[in-house]
Length: 111
Image (cartoon, rainbow, N blue to C red; front, side, top):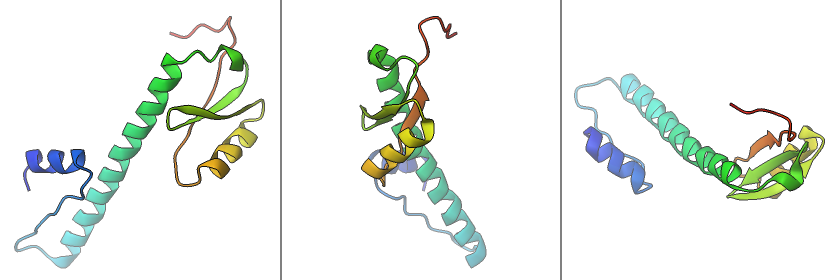
């Protein structure tokens, strides 16, 4: 499989099919595991980037000084205790990854 085929398989949400000629079964298994880890990290990066973009583009002024959890481009939990916010988001969306962040005070400079 070349890079173009691999990239297109990622875009189509398919697991790439790889063949290993003249390689040991151990090497093939290690390669399969590493590729699956890469694919999982790739999708995680896409999800987290979407949640981060939502955070940057949304008016969160109602949550100043609080922790918020964002999942699927919506705020799913908020509060003063980060552990409670994380737990509540995990209970609502157990199979999803949420972005948990604190909304800074107005005086906080972000650069």
